[in-house]
Length: 314
Ligand SMILES: Cc1ncc(C[n+]2csc(CCOP(=O)(O)OP(=O)(O)O)c2C)c(N)n1
Ligand SMILES: [Mg+2]
Image (cartoon, rainbow, N blue to C red; front, side, top):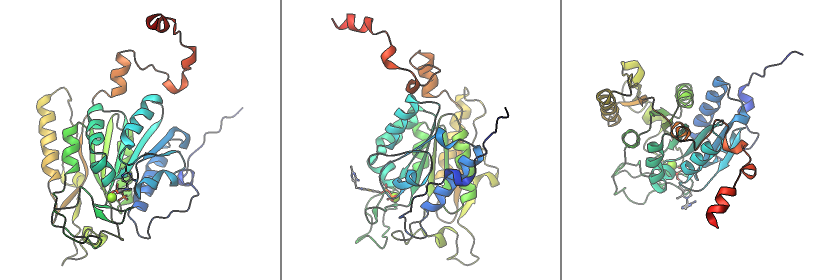
């Protein structure tokens, strides 16, 4: 009998659900880039789990034909971590907004980096709380005032790339929501990377963010109309640590990534800032005998011999 191999097409990753994102929202670009990356890597939809926090960005799993989980505000990373440990055969993608990940979920953002679980975390960074009508998010610059804010922002913005490097993410990148092809490449690299991969995506919000618009990013507002975005890989920037056991090389690459992450304004880098290959949490748990080769989800906990445990509790 001939075995027919299924070749997945883009439509196999599209859910037939009406989207209620605003027309022109950058989220459409990120959604398309995720679907393109999955299709390029030919990950079967039933081997993918997409989890989200709460926000406009949190609706992403609804539109992808795969396992989808719309979890709690700021809690997508602990959820995704548990999911990956329970079923390490799945490709796990966590998504959420900048408010979700860098505000209410900031502690989880840092601690997921320390663990280096094999998952991909994509943050939709529109500098505002889109779903709740455009309040300042942690990435909005001090002094900025979008059309939805009554007053200027009085707080400083955080630097997600520098934080991610400092937290221990082993793949750190930035993409642009409207450069779908480039973002799709980044997401494919992030999924292929073994370890916690983080992508901060500059995302336009045509409804609430009238400062960092499509026109602003692409430099259409200035003479010469030169894009403010440039690709790190086209400048010879090398983000990859060749020898993870060499602390000096790791330090030099981390410092180079952090220095680049502070470039903003006239020239904004996108691409991979940092990448290193280190044991994942799963590797470390496997070495201790806590995690086996067969995913926990496929073992039957009721068939375990619990006599010893019952004895201990007597
Ligand atoms: C525990 C909790 N606090 C507050 C809210 C209200 N809330 C819903 S979405 C959101 C912020 C969304 O902003 P962001 O994460 O940047 O996502 P975006 O809508 O911009 O994609 C807030 C504060 C909530 N749902 N749950
Ligand atoms: Mg947001």
